[in-house]
Length: 168
Ligand SMILES: CC(C)(COP(=O)(O)OP(=O)(O)OC[C@H]1O[C@@H](n2cnc3c(N)ncnc32)[C@H](O)[C@@H]1OP(=O)(O)O)[C@@H](O)C(=O)NCCC(=O)NCCS
Image (cartoon, protein in one colour):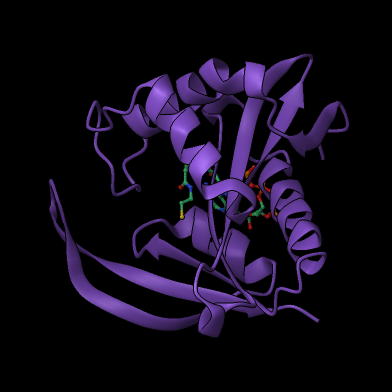
């Protein structure tokens, strides 16, 4: 477990650093839907999205010595009939994986969600992302469905797996 890492909300001034971290992870991660260089959002887009979605989106970051080393986005459902559902996306910097930071981020997002009357945490993960699936299973997430061969990869096709956890 990485004891020097603090999990806390992203601060506005950290937006450029957050975008760099996300870009560097997306550029090298083969288990993500987005491909290298594909995300074209500028800081204005990201800031505007955060302002527009307001309380519905919360970004928590893992910080070590002032440097962002991971993040988790929790998106709370917009429509009334879906209230109680929250959708997660997350990543940890390559150099900091396997230290328990992903686990800490998930726990923090769940604690945050509980303060917002959330019943279900939901996420999607590619079938070949065995490390992430292991983490989610360990944290109590179960598989609810599969979009077969929904993703085209360099070596063929991959599934998108839906996982969820009921909060108590
Ligand atoms: C998935 C990810 C967030 C995990 O973060 P992490 O900080 O390494 O996770 P943790 O150190 O808390 O690991 C927790 C558990 O997950 C499992 N796990 C995580 N990465 C693993 C890997 N590469 N191989 C095998 N198991 C792995 C292990 O079971 C581990 O528990 P253990 O240490 O008790 O064995 C990180 O690998 C990552 O950012 N990957 C690239 C982006 C990504 O795939 N995001 C998820 C998209 S759905």
